[in-house]
Image (cartoon, rainbow, N blue to C red):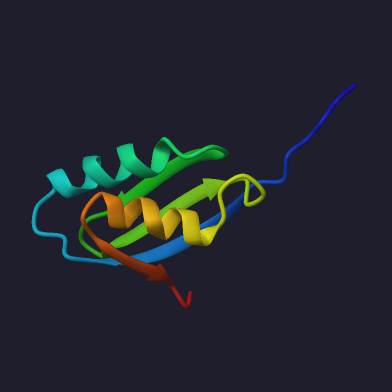
Amino acid sequence: MNTTTALTTTVLRAEGFSCPSCVAKIEKRVGRLPGVDSVTVHFASARIEVRHDAALSDVDALIDAVAKAGYVARPAAF
């Protein structure tokens, strides 16, 4: 039996970045969520790109994880 999981990419905009070490903090926290395949934080543009299984971790879970890391995030319009 072969099961496939549809992964989606969610882009968030974050606020409160003050140094590049924030990147590792967010990537670590969001990366721990179930169903998260990869997390890329772009420091210069404050964008967070998350490739994940939305059935296991939805957008609200991603935003909550960023908040637990100490930052505010919201879905990006594009």
